[in-house]
Image (cartoon, each protein chain N blue to C red):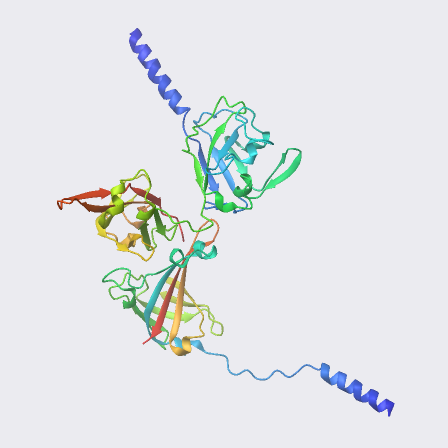
Length: 164
Length: 291
């Protein structure tokens, strides 16, 4: 009887130490079809990175530039990512500086962190914010200004876009 | 002829003295520092200054608002004394260039028999625990005995990035910008400086004039009397994009824009209804070379 108890105990210990089978976690998200479509800029913000790092008050850290220039709202800006890999952008009356047309691709199909725009020999990498909200039609582009000698980020721009 | 030679001698003497009075040039690396920035190097070029030709050059630095205001480098104990500067204040020579000297942080020295390392500007001035107290420091370069010195009127100073937000009479947002950025200039009349026309405090219709300049101070273009907005922080603000501020004259472009001057104006009305225009001083800031 004692032997059976030992055997049962050993069996229990051995099986409890075996790794659990990892359950399937579903298909990897393919963001490219989700990004295809026309996006309109809904908010354009400027952030003083130095002030942000020092936890300065909001008014000294962040500024909403969306409608800061009368008659030239940044919300005029739209960009269309076509499923065939081409894109077109329209700045409307805004002062937005963006490539007008060309090809677009993700820097990494599985784990994208940027959209790469190319037009002829010109190429531009647009950093992406979190892609968690792409499914509900929201995406963020990010731009950073850096100090050349230190590489330190000094100013950030955040473009929030909504799918039309 | 004799008179002519005397005049020539006087002119030569005046210009010679002026040449020896030139301000030392200096470069701070990294270009933007705050009181807590580490690994800072300041290189001084003494060419043409009063200490040009000396092999041993000392720094005498002070930070307004501190007591004592002098850096701990200039004295070993007690209080600072112009007549007995510490060896710790001697600048390091730059190898291969006898006219250049440098101060590098961290810097380890012996003070009152104890070895001390200064890692940043705040520690250099003895406010390592309260770095927000130091906003800038002025300096002059001198010989050990003090018989030779560069101007000490604050003409040579290092401005530090703020560690905590301090409301100011004039500021920009972001605090430092490049000429490719959206720039907002802000005026807080509640913090008007004593040298300003105090009528500005009761002025209305506040407008602003903005001028873009080349590095040599040549005007490129300007916008006169643009309308301002009154913000929730009770500041008058004006936002612009240098590239869109106006038409660039032929032969100039945004790449030439190095500095910006800003002047606010307002109107004060007498009881009889006559309007008087009052203006602020001209504020100037430099654009940063951000990528």
